[in-house]
Length: 284
Image (cartoon, rainbow, N blue to C red; front, side):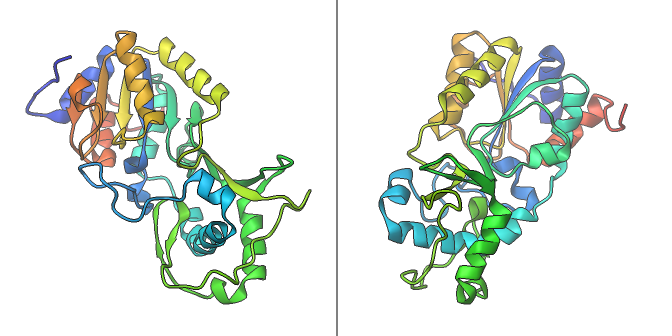
């Protein structure tokens, strides 16, 4: 599928949206970086830092869980205090105006909902909750934060730099004494209510997203390299269904050769420009 090449990329994006007013929007980490949440990959799609914990490592190793929760103890406050940026606000405005049929996000920060979007599928879950792998208890991550801090007062006083998805850089610490609270309901293993690398996305969630894509006019990818198949699958499905794809992303994406339009601009600036051209700056 040929990719558009024009002098004004925001005009091109505006034309794409006007021609396809029922958009299926897929967002990734690049949508939240202006909110202070770091992303995982560089412009080439390569890892910027150590790869995230994989599911089998988390459930199979107490040491891995100690390391994960120690870092999360320090990263959670900054992650929880993040607020929606111009990109989130613009997508909420586009949804209210009828241009967004469905948003599916690979992010776990809940910022789309905070900005006012209502049609959101959290493909990879939400970091603001924890769940038990034994009894399926589900609780607040904020409450769990208090339990982590109470069990590990020395760790709670440490300082660390925020990483992606509430992680923190804490490489030289001894995690052997870190105490991870158990499930308050059954004493089982608690895990953040997100899909880890190496863990499948729940089938009903994928099926619902695919249904919504089938109802849309086009796919718009925002701030995702599409390196992970859980997001790239929607590009493959859109192609099979004859739906055009546009991507708003500063770096390379896995679907670059399959795009109708590629806009290499910051998400917030491009979407704010889109609102201006659609005369949607003010609330209706």
